[in-house]
Length: 201
Image 1 (cartoon, rainbow, N blue to C red):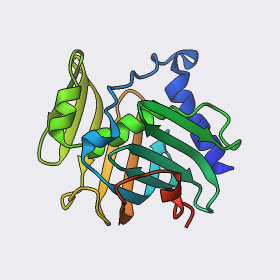
Image 2 (tube, rainbow, N blue to C red):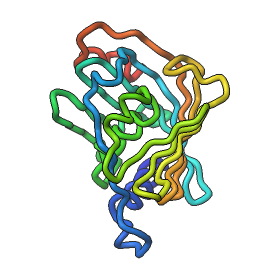
Image 3 (cartoon, rainbow, N blue to C red):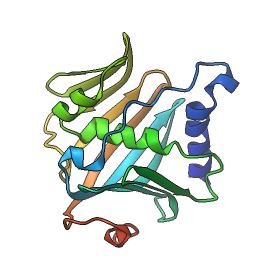
Image 4 (cartoon, rainbow, N blue to C red):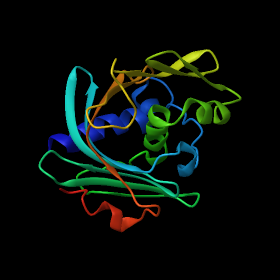
């Protein structure tokens, strides 16, 4: 039940900020095609959301392939919470009844791309009001002159590999997502639902 209310709080901030009288919902940066990242791996990850002085934990299985990006989230006890797939120009999503608000699928996908995609691919996609600035261990995404998202990498970060850690900080929402990769598996050339057979393990 903890994750039910954790996700409700996060999604309320994403989708209902105007209702709370804070700010409009954060805009979603451009979403690139799955193959543009040049990745072909499945990552088992631990995600920690920090918001309003509280921390909430979830296990994520994320796969990046030339044809598909997929994110599946679980509670620490193995209950599936959500499943998001980007493939063939379409985004489909499923969520458990434990989550009683719509999951912002496109937004979540865009955050993973911001963290893991090559800088060159992102620079080509982020134009107009969006701009990306990168330093040795940081990526900053701006909307015009406003810093919207900051990605910070651990000193020994080496890309999507076991043991790698990064933090995504959303300045508008005062939300921090800490991601630790626990396991990495190389995928076959084609990715589909069958490739997620290990998701619940």
